[in-house]
Length: 285
Image (cartoon, rainbow, N blue to C red):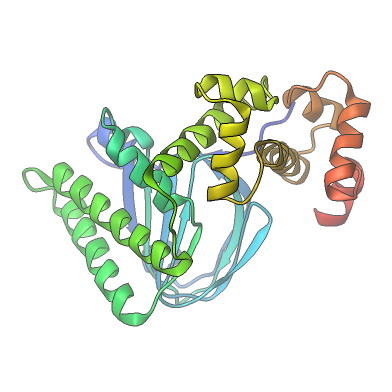
């Protein structure tokens, strides 16, 4: 089974424990006057691309996005993406591990999940300037490394994520109650961990100490989808990731996703995409 290429945080700092969990670079320094072209890959860290000026193309989990001025891309670990970033683009590329953002505190964990639930933010100039100043401050602290700089970076990351959640709430007029939102986040976290072995709604309801009716009611009220729909969507997405980003055989991908019956997996994939796995790979690679 071939794995999707995984990028790690580039360790160039003198403090190995810190540099392996956080990094920030200016985009113009990365480009050095040339286009940046990256093929399909995934990260084991959160990836934040902040563009004051931008041109190119970005595709995240097979959804295309424009690369434009005053925009922010926020990706979670495990998502698959590819992009072309044109010379002349400016801004910051920031990377950090989950353990850096919230080692032992659940409150930042919920904040980070909410902020990264939206992969693409396009902002008006005033809001963008406000957020970009936070990135300037983080970059300055990261570069100068004065006393307490790690704590200052973490505090500003929380401010940045809080501001992004505010903007997302304004855009989507989010009216979900706190209890439903927290249960949704717990379900999504369990889904990422257990999807390869557990595919039944009742299994996730039991993990959350809910009935299947309660779980479906929460998911319908927050995302407008049933638990089964979300489980199926996640399986199909992970299958697509491996079909496009690797040369693994369909049988290997099926086994990786927890299907011993390859024929059943092929029928399942075609039912939800209208393509066989091989046809999908041929048409979209």
